[in-house]
Amino acid sequence: MMNDTEPRFYPTVIREMIRHENDVINHRIMWPLIGQGLFANAFVNADSEQANVVLVLAPIGVLMSLSAFMILYRGYHARGYLQFLGDEAKRGALKEENLPLFGWPPHRIKGWRRKAWICPWIARLSDVLEPYFFLPGMLILAWLFALMQRWTPFGEGIVLLLAAVLAAVILSVFCFLWVWSQSRKELSTNQEVDGEPRLFARTNGVL
Image (tube, rainbow, N blue to C red; front, side, top):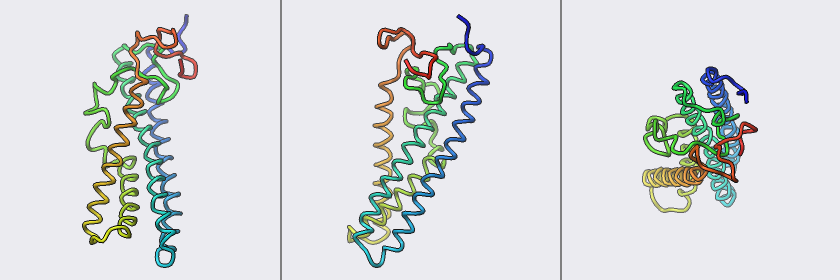
């Protein structure tokens, strides 16, 4: 059976997929900025007159920020997985059935993060300063600060510190749960799924 793509072109194909994933991440960063801008405008207008509206807008702002982070975080892992596949392709160890059609296929090679990432949740500590981490984190921090200012009797400095800690905890728990849920779909190349011994079928990236 002939391959869809010759193995010597695998690194080129994956390089293009990484470039596409970077473009998608950049576009997704704009979505929370636009949506949060609308909510921030409503928050400022309602701040002095409608306290109840503010208490509704702030939780919605946190949820919107967390939703944006989920999309960006998945793209972050998709790019990391493609980089792993690219390294495998350069070594000549990548099989065609493991070459996906998109960055984050339904099933992935088990333990792919171990070779390059410092932990299952993040590749490098410096990545927390990248927009896909930093922007949702700052938005969640801002909304929590606005919300806790009304719910707590503390000064602004203490409220800011509490909001920062709570934002970090929320994102950390989310990352842990998301990676845990996704790791259940990581399979060894010889593991059977639905009676099929291969990890991937080369049709739409699904088994």
